[in-house]
Length: 561
Image 1 (cartoon, one colour):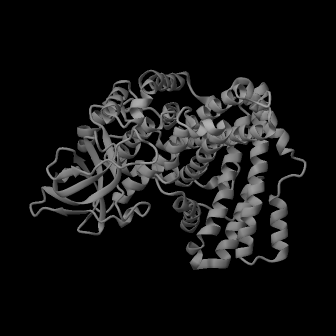
Image 2 (cartoon, rainbow, N blue to C red):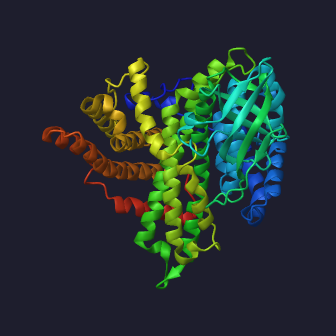
């Protein structure tokens, strides 16, 4: 990666990123690619042969696979070497997540352990606490779990009711409450538990499985992710040592939200891999399946689906790995053993919260749409378990809910931009950008803030619309910058993807902008001006673009990058 630092978090909206500052998959080192191949080989040899048992909810098998993943180095890749891991960067961690995704139950169990269960401890735990637990998590000797949600608090994490009380002698905490939807519960030995000290100070604790008073509910009967363990974690007068407090009392939201930021990023890195496999399965089927004496891949309606999936996947992949590079720019150089490590980890995990939220929404909704189209391409077969697209569709549906429902995450993107502007961290006035999507998003954002003022938070529909335009801008710029690193036929395919993505984003953007303009009672001149700028070029032949991309996908029966 270039020594030129990426733009600060959120600054992409008002500045055009220098090409040399943006990481893309073409920049991976040989060592990172080798780690990616190791993850891919592990999936093919250890996981995929057992899909039927995983889908039948064989949790002993899943526990065994997780321990094997630890032995293979796939659980400790990003844990610092000082605590038993390999100390690899976020880019390589994202590549591992991508390669493991096609069996989504295993991928989610892996993510729950390596990201949201491990990172609160890694980022905010004391040196002694990290020395005690991180080596076990990195090696796979112990499996971790993240216990945040409750029956009455999902996306509203701070609404948790679980309580923690310090003993009179100050030696232990007593926890009481029930956690809901907790992944890895059946085989986890260590839980990151969030509770309120004295009923109001949101805090984080490391709780071992065998601690007296810890018990578990029955397995949830879920739509998808059937190979994962999802249960309640019940805490009844559970006493944990004082030193198992992670970070400071009342600062548990740092641990929760930083882990969720990284979880949003890592889940969508996985989505890149899952959508690639979905596209490949669809291309192979479209070539093989004959109707009316010709392959269904020769029909325009099928080509339209394949072409759009390819273009949008190129957008997501470009954005995810750009973000991976941006994250590494702020994580690099942190001394995990230093007394002030928590301060640096907090800054690093929070800096690109906007971009993490963007890829979360874009990736989870693309995965939903792509797997739905995959079922349609397969017709009646797609609705059966004979082909893998039914499982892919069921499994991915969780991503629009997990790590914060998209209805919450969309307004977060806008609210974080506005908060940073108020803090002086980001100027939303300067518009040093040539991107139509960025300029339109900024104009709509200014219009909303001027019209609604203090009541803006209640305008979630409008905030969501502007968020989608801004998110498209981040993805489109990521694609455009990546093109410069490609050559020959692949570069031309990338140009087709970028042109189609821009056309589709602007087409959707016009409808979104119209909603906002109408809601704000914008004058006719402003409306006409903004919609004219945002409208896609009439010269763009979207049908031709989709057909050209589909031809490339069908020829190789795979994603072409």
